Length: 191
Ligand code: ADP
Image 1 (tube, rainbow, N blue to C red):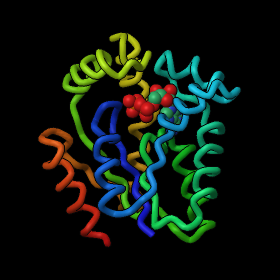
Image 2 (cartoon, helix red, strand yellow):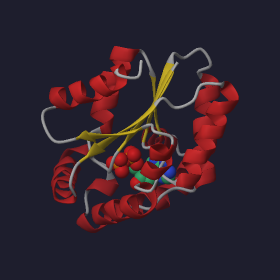
Image 3 (cartoon, rainbow, N blue to C red):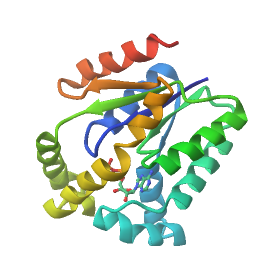
């Protein structure tokens, strides 16, 4: 098993890199943002509850996203491993993920953190807003709130994995292939 947390602020490039990584390493991609958006499109009660938080750039409650991830892990019992994208986003989520995986005897191998500065992020997010159609990408104050929430609630998750010697900082500026190479080197060094 190879379990990877792909970490970094909104629009650091996690989704793009996750797609390339799961092909190369044959992993299952679990993106809490994608799962929440699917719930929203299907207008499930969970999706409708999450919408209010997502539209403001706030985090959805820990218990909701932890439950979602647990279901997906259970539904993919035969997987070679997982790429967690957009999760864990708080220390509570990181602890919950650890205990879920510990029970299965397949811990996180690495936490790869894509580093991109705030100015570049806002530029990328506003650009994406023009064609992604996502409500939370359209408005500068919502985008700034997502970055604020990231710095306050999510960035501390780095310490959680650093304490376990699993954290690797990856330069998130460069071409898609350059960044992909950096990620693969880090993964291959622990495989
Ligand atoms: P981005 O990385 O661009 O911020 P995501 O697709 O990962 O986008 O997430 C979009 C929104 O979904 C977040 O702003 C948040 O409201 C919600 N969300 C996604 N993952 C989580 C999570 N692990 N915990 C809480 N809320 C989440």
